[in-house]
Every structure is written in C-alpha cells, then in structure tokens.
Figure (cartoon, rainbow, N blue to C red):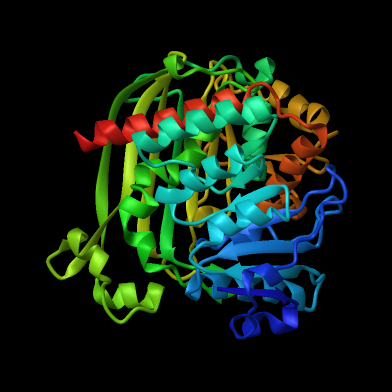
Length: 457
C-alpha cells in the first residue's frame, strides 16, 4: 500500500513514497459548497481530461485511490502534463493512495464529496453503488452499465441517490459540440423545422452515426490503451459503449427537456460485428508484446476479434431512430473520428457531416423543403445571434445551406470535458438536476442494454 502527496514535478516519483494507513492524511471538507474530487481507479484517459482545466468551485487537491500499475502512472503523467504546460498551466495537487483496498480506503477516509470514475465498465456500477450508499456524489464517464445486471444496480443507485439527496451524473460531452447544439436549436424553431417526422426503419426521423479509431492522439501524445479495453466483457460491446452518446443526443434533441420513460422505447432491430486486430496493431496501441491471456476467448485465428461495432433501430415515442457506431484501427492520414447526424422535419432537414469535404470538422447543413430560406435566415441572423454571435449562412451548389460557425466555437472534443464538468458543478451548486435528467439517463441505458440483447439473439 502506498500513499503520497504529489505535486506536478514529483508525479513520476509516486511509487517511491509510502506510509502506513494510520499515517494517511485526510483533509477536512471546509464547506459543503466546495467540490472535492476523489478519483477512483482511473483506468480510462477521460478521468484525466476533466482536469485539463481548473474550476473556481473545485478544490485544487485531487484525492486519487487506485490499484498499482501502469494505468495510475499514465493518469498521473497526464495531469502532470497539464500542470507543466507552458500555456495556461493547471495547479492541481494530488493526494494518491495505491493498494488493493483502494475502494475501501476511499470509503473509510472520504476526503472528498464527489467521486469521479472512468475505467473498466464492468465494475464501474459497483463503484458507483458503493459511493452512493456511503453518501458520496458521483460524476462518471460513460457508459455507467454494459449489461442487464448492471442496469438493475443502476436503478437501485438512482433510487438511493434520490433518498440521500445525491447527484449521479454521466459525462455527456457531445451535448457541447457546437453543430449539435445548433441542430437542436433549429429543430426547436417551428417556422424553420416544422415538426419531427415519424420516419420509418428505412428512413428514420433521426439518425446518429459515428466512426472512431483505436489508435489516436490525445493531448498531443499517442494514446496507449489498456489491454482490457479490447475485452468486451470489461469495456462492453460497441453497442453499449459509444452508442450511449448517440442515444443521449437523440433524446436530448428529439424531446428537449421532456421526461422520458422506458415504455417510450420500442426496439426494432440491432446487430453487432467485430473489428479484427493483428498482433502488430495490438502492440502499437497497447504496448503489449503479445495478446493477453484473458483475450484468448476473443481470438479469431491469429487476430483479435473486438465486437466494437453496433447498430440499432428503434422508436422513441413513435419516432423512428437509428444509431450506428464503427471502430477502425487508425484514421487515414489527415482524417479523424467522424460524426453524421440527420433530423428530418416537415419543413427542413438538419444534417451534420464531418467528412473529407468538411476537412473532418463537423459542419451543419440545412435543406429547406420549400426552397424559401426566409425563416432560416431570420433564425440564424436574429433568433440565434444572441446566444451564438457571428453565425452566417452560405448557399451550397446542392441547394442546401451551410451554417457558418466562427472558429472560436470549434473548441474540440477534449474541451467538451470542461464544459460538461461546469454543467455538473452548476447542478452541484444548485443541489439538484433538472427533473428530466435522471429518468432520461435510465431510459438511455435501458435502450442500449435492450439493443445489446437484440444484437446477441
């Protein structure tokens, strides 16, 4: 067991400092209004990304509880990088405990009031439930659950959180992508969009598709993923992982601030399929010299079959929706992760593309059914200017209209972690979340788990 107080310059020396449990220092929480973060078992790089920025209402000391190993070292290095960068460095101070009893130690010491968790998705819900049962707010990376057993625990966690007046919130960064925000805004202007069509399975009312890559760069450095990331029993099939974001966006855009229920979801079809990884590719993304023993169950000949891809077709309150997620190994030179989205209204289609023509940056297009752009121009030039100054319209050769967005709004995926954290902090300061957040989280995970069951048939 090891405990240390780590400043940025000493992050790499973590494992040389140790003391007995009785010597551990626990800071007293001075005010319930001050957020003190306890990071538990940071196995995913998202645990570090929320600390790329600092926040006035968050204490500068992060309390970290984790098992020993490369994942905690990677996490500490990432935060040290933020502290030591030349431009706008952070000033996080780290109190770190490592040992096999890291969860029990966090519960017994409880030096903070908010647990942040991002890592193995199979055991994440057990961490969440333990924190909630012990009076700790939870701020967690998606997905919160990946199987039916986990979903039952999640409903229990939400019930206890309500009884104890605690927040349990997942990190939905994609709500802060500017083109998605504008797509939602325009869909709420009847003069422009009309009403969301009902759609059909072949021609959904709302579609969300995304393409991701195992090998990528994060904060300027190649991302080394842990080997368990490729075990769908720990990470989850693709249909319950990244699809969480897409299902969330469908709910958030198609039914803004409407309280949803699991009975509003009717699954039509779902499927999953594998991405094949050679040993060479596995070595490149994990740093491991060979496939781990626990991955042997997923071998397809000499390659690893990772069921990271998924698609679902369902209705939400009678509106047909389609969600699709694809994982490739590495994006072609000059490209990146991509997103496609379409909302079909009775007066216009709102389309987000992020392909080569858009230089792999998301762009919002509007196809006006009447060919009369007057209402769209009014919405862009008057209605939305107060919230998003600088928006413009450009007519494309196709007849669609491109919404021109100032570069300052395109702050990137990593910056969205600060934005969603700020939203959580607002909820924390208010002592509550909007009435729709919790039931819609439950509905969201019901949808992904149901899709997995359909795909496994």
